[in-house]
Length: 245
Ligand SMILES: [Ca+2]
Ligand SMILES: [Ca+2]
Image 1 (cartoon, rainbow, N blue to C red):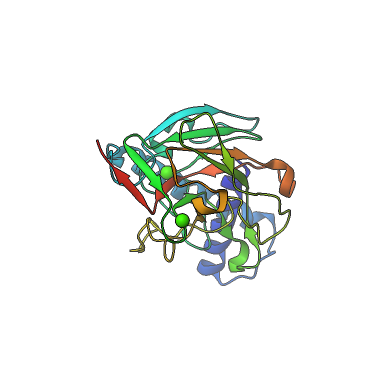
Image 2: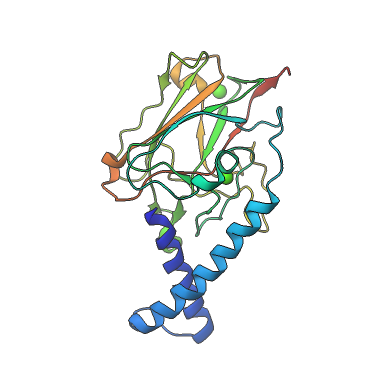
């Protein structure tokens, strides 16, 4: 999970800058110090999340099950907390850092999420949101740190409709994995079900001609950016859905 180390280095660089008032590029000694400090903080956060994870609610508007997963090379991060780490609400990292409450799919990895008794429906505008852990590198909205995936939807789990994902540079259109996640971030009150404030990558069933869906398939796309990392799934939230348990 390349992004993990990117984040560690970024946090390290920020803490060095804030604490000492030094400009970037002071040399490897400072970078090493920062990396150590950042790593400790992040490990603590992961442990806290692990113990605090509530049971998945059946009608709360999030994915409720992992129907299938096939990891690609480089996967591993987050697998010890599957499936819970990919279900329920997102735990965003905000605009300039990425959540670690994610499972890394690995290169070309595929995950199929089920909605249980919930039915995703085509309403006005976006109908669901996929949350990765993208962030704005250096705070620049024009330069998202993106690890992309193709998103598909299905009503029966057998026939799939894919959202177009072809861009090789930002903005990445209907790919998932390039918009920072605000919902669930520290200090954020953003609803994960509101595409106007949640962050993440929104999808509209009307774009693929479907009225409803019960499964969402996410496939890592290492070919688009040429990066060595892979898509890291935090969560999927529904915007328009019904539930009949
Ligand atoms: Ca819609
Ligand atoms: Ca998560």
